[in-house]
Every structure is written in structure tokens, then in C-alpha cells.
Length: 292
Length: 289
Image 1 (cartoon, each protein chain N blue to C red):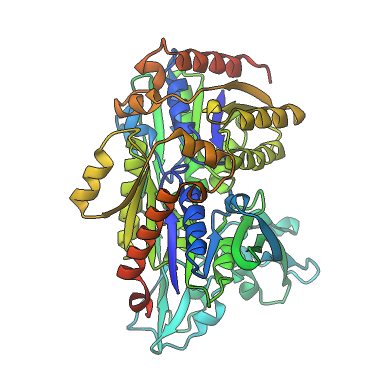
Image 2 (image 1 turned 90 degrees about the vertical axis):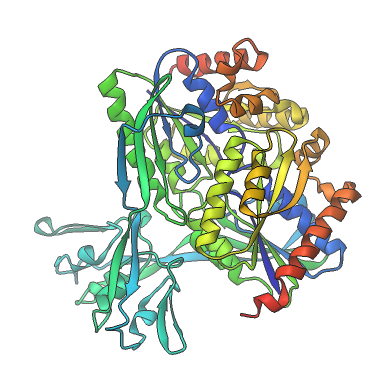
């Protein structure tokens, strides 16, 4: 099994566009493929396919519940909490958990010597498994509105991938912070999608630097090529990063995508190009390489 | 007055529009709250009058001279950050949440917590006022806290310099940094585009804005890429009583302006799109809360 993450520092460069089209192309080429939508804050991949939900599971986190009758207001739990999630005023005998700030680390339970802390689960979001063409193919991570970090939901979604699949495509969240790292950390290869603009280049550089720190091989797809300048291409050749594909800016592509259509279904040349990109990645980075 | 420009979906034109709004006429404070992928400094090339370190959290590090490989820390860690590889305890920097629990329970005192101190916040001037922005170091978290810091600084700069308007260029998504960007602002502008993803993400964004009872405006950018979808978005906004601030056409010159290091309104104020942006901005500014 090979895991390929589709990522980009900048939002809106076409991650979901590439991820859904590669997934579709792989299915057409009879690969056993799965698509994991890890953009838990704004998951959109399933809108591009005819799907049926097979199962959905709740992702939860434990938060402390303090029994005020047992509590001695010693303040040890407050001291152990690194997230300021426990508010305490010992003289007034006030103690309160601020659930929104809690990361569920369990330190307060360890700190409490009188057994006044128990824990209850709270929902962070859902992971849903969908089938396409009758086969389980799509996993969606969806974070609840108002939850602070999508990371636990992303991790739960990645844990659900079927080990028998040949290729896993992961649609990563934008940026280079924690949610991005969590997604790409489990990938064998990362496709960075960018656009030929100064914003695109700046965010691409940041993504490349981040991937270097965790030693992930990557290649780049330039989307909407022809719209900006050539600085992205120059950067790639100077840095010796492989340019996997350039997709020209065409209103027809933008229009098809906007309607939730898979472009490679209607454009066999594009489908062919994507197949080649994937074939090359598998040849150079697949199988033998990921037997770690 | 603080006005936040956000969008659930990335790449809808938040930063380009924030830049245009910031360079329309009177001087403003612009704060780039997309600390994960700050871009506005590329257009505005601000001076760095102040640089402040930002501690985004902590990471656990093992001192192997003291570690007895007992594995107690692994049993306590809730973030799957500690594993035992070849009978040696290893902490994954990527998974560590910085909760300190392992360092507190280690019987050998072999775990030390180190600060993540690579993130920065900058404050300075640009050609149309003051600018504050944050840059989160790769892979770090707690971007919401850095956004709060950027906003505090922007408010301070605004009162020190008598600049009334603060424009916050927000991050994509609906998570912590977005909540930090919109909490307590006067107005929220949601930039969307006429795609299925644009509509879907806008709905989630509106939900979060309504949770905070903030006055919201929607701008449909590149509306002519799919007019049907634009109608759908307009309809949905009307049904949900969200003000549409305006529709903007797709214009290649937005990219050309960016390459020249200018906002579209600076690049050519006489363009149809520049005039529309000006009308939209006046509508947002003048609407009573």
C-alpha cells in the first residue's frame, strides 16, 4: 500500500480538485484506491462522487468532571493543566472545567490525589465511510463547528483506512501547521499543488521547507498555469524539485469543477496525464520504499 | 472598528480583497491573521519596527542518560506520541501535544519540556498605514493564540496612531484561528466563490459567525465562473438574512496586480472591478450594526 497526500500551503490552489481527479482516475485504472478527506474543517470531496454512507463514527475526547464534594481545592489539577482549562478559587471553594480549552491529556486526573476527578467523552466530530460504485472508497473527517483543533478527527480518519487498498489518496488541510503535519506524516509521498502567483510561490516554499524537516519526498503540480508568472517553475528547477504536471488555466475546467464534476471524466487527455504522474510516483517511491 | 475578512474555503480572494480594501483611501491598520500562510507582507513590504517571539507551546524531550526505558510515560500519553522502538523510548515530536504529563510522572526525571520559540510576530508601517502580522513556524500549533496576539498589537497600534479602521485578513477554515480572528470584531466579511465547495464552506462559516452573533456580509468573488451557482449562493443568503455586499467578476488583472506587488485598486483604480470593490467597501463601512 502506498499513501499519497495532496497538500498546499495556500488554500484554494486545487488540492481537492487534484485529489478527487486522481482518485477517479485510479478507480478507472482498476486500482483499489481510497480517498481520505483530511480537510476536516472544510471537507468537500464527497460532493464530487455518487456515494452511499456505510458507517459513521463519533470522534470524542475525554474532559474532566470534578466532584465538588470530594474536591479539597488543593489546586494540584490546576497546576498540572498546561492549557488553563481548570479555573480555581480555593478560598471561595470555586472550581470549574473550561471544556473548550481542555486537550484531554488526563494530567488533572493523575494530579488529583483524592479521586475527585472522573472523565466524560465529548464529541469533536465524525469520521464517515462512504462507498463509490459499491466499494468502500471514501473516508471523510468532519470536525464539529466550534472545536479548536481538527487533529484528533484527522488522526481517527487516517486510522480507518483499509490496509488491503493499493493506494490511499489523502486530501490534506491547507497550511503548514499541525493539521497539515498530521496528515502528511503518515504519507509516503506528498504532491504539493500550487498556482503561479507570488502568494502561491511563498506558500509553496514554506510547504517545501516543512516537508524537508520531516524528510518527506515531494513533487509539485502547478494549477492554473499561464495565469501568473514563471517564478514557481524557476524555483522548482533551482531547488531540484520535480514538476509533476502543469494544468493550464481554462475557464471550462473551472466551470466543470464549480458544478462538482470530475474533469478527468470528461477530458481523457487530462486523465492520461494524471495516470502518468501516479505511475511515476509509484515506480519511484512505492512498494520497496515503503516497507519500513 | 475591526472588520474581519474570512472564508471557509481557501483561495477565494481574502487576501487580494483585504489588500484592496486597505489601499482604497484613508490610512488603516492591516493585520494578517492567516499566521499559517501569511501573504500580505509580499504586497505591502512593511518595515519591521518590532519583532516579538511567540512561544507556541512545548515539546517533550528525553534525556537518555537518565531514561531507564521503563515505559511508564508511554502508558500515560494520550496523544500516541510515545513509542518503544527496539526497547528504547522514543517521543514523536509531531504527535507530542506539550501537555507536560510525561515529564511529571517520569520516575527518573528524564523528560524535559522545551519551548517552541520559532514563531514570530512583526509590527511596522506600510504605504497606507500600519501593518501587524504573525508567522507561525512550520508544524507548530496554537495559531489561535498568535492571532490573539496579532489583534492585540493591531489595536494598540490603532489607538497610538489614531487609525480607526482595523482590517483583519483571516485564515481559511472554521477552527481555532478563525474563531480567534472573529471573536468580538465589529463586522465580518465572508468571501466565497460560485463552486460547490465555495457554497458548502460558506454555510459552515456563516454558522460559526452566527454562533458569535456577528453582523456578516458575503462577497461572491469570480461570480461569472458559474452564474447559476452564484444565484444559488445569493438565494441561500437571502433566505438566511445575510447581506450580500456585492458580486465581483473574474479578472486576470487581479493576478497581474499581485505580481506587480500592488492591490488591484492601486494597480488600476479605473477598472470595473476596482470600482465595484470600492462600492462594496463603502457599503460594509456604512452599514449600521
